[in-house]
Picture 1 (cartoon, one colour):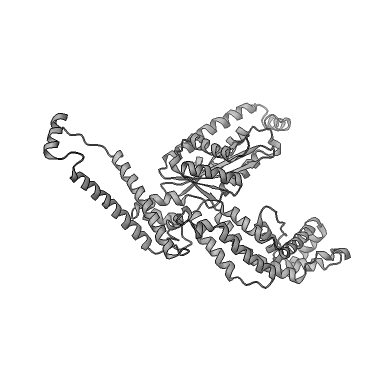
Picture 2: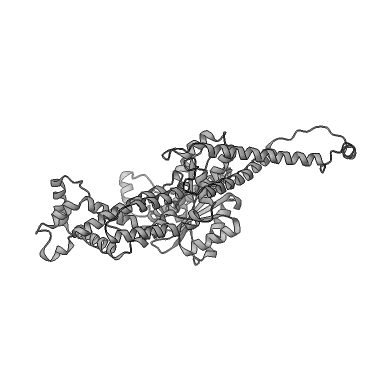
Length: 510
């Protein structure tokens, strides 16, 4: 920009005595700012004593350069969710599972994040990234969480494949395209909207990669059904040969049913894509809720009955390992640590007992670590003692050596005491009434952290995990604006720096 002739002329008119800094001057400023910001982010992650979660995704820019985006999520001392961009690193080698796993490890090492501190990686359903996270799971124990949004996308895509639904959606798509291209039709539609008192909304076009865009298209078309029908019946808009654009009554009815069927899924997708509140703990209850709403829905058309059956099969098969098998797992444990879902009503009584036992086991481990940290951090009092030989002789005379039965018994009593404390804490927590669904679980924990200190520490590690990989995808929205066609010569390293600074701007201001 500063080397552009037009820009230089404008600046010279505004202030003839001003000398524009060079391009390299700004490049150095950005690089220096990045180093400062990098250190701040690194220090913030290091200062947090609870576990953190990653989201990861791969994107290709307009300059056909591939980038790996990684974000980091944790809950701070103030019980607020923090989301930080770690990198939008350029990747030149093949996107094999081994390479992706190695790149993620490199990012963790760059920020000096210990392996034990990472609890999970959230990712999409791409075969290479699924295999990469499996490598890291086997190597470091990082849990693999598939993005709820991508999974719902696969569920709906499979369910929309019925020929009757595809014909109706295709007809709706053709109708919307016609109104988009015809200026006369669009003008007449606005007139009809005013006459009929219908909201003056534009028709929406769907995108093949996003199923919810199909829902938005159908829903908007149903809202504008009568203005659209009236516009098409106007001979000046629809000539004789174009009456095929008009939807038949049975197609309108099918689209209305489809809109009703898709609405709960759209609601779930939008909710799970949130970044500023807890999401993973809601996944199990949400999927069970989708199954329930799908079962009670009554549809008249056979395509929607087929849609209903496919949705049920898809939901059960894709979440089989989380909701119906392998319980307890990380998703269900996060639900147990969310005061809104602590009763685990979506599980059987036997499964609830096993989840509570899992929570107690993990809480016991956390308690031991907390006690160990307290011991190491507390100052040791210094007292005068007899010489080593005299002390050893006295120990043997008094039978107070390290291996005496009394000390062993004291150790067992101390362990039993810790176990009892944790058990009482867990039982008291699960005995409490569930929090209202609209309340913020992190605010509840902030208020009750002293009442349940061990579980509060454990909750921070589980409730920070996002339910979708949306945060890493949002990086690419920023990166797409930075690495645009006008800036296609920007080096990948500078794309990473600028995306890092942009995505972490709010955190750096604080």
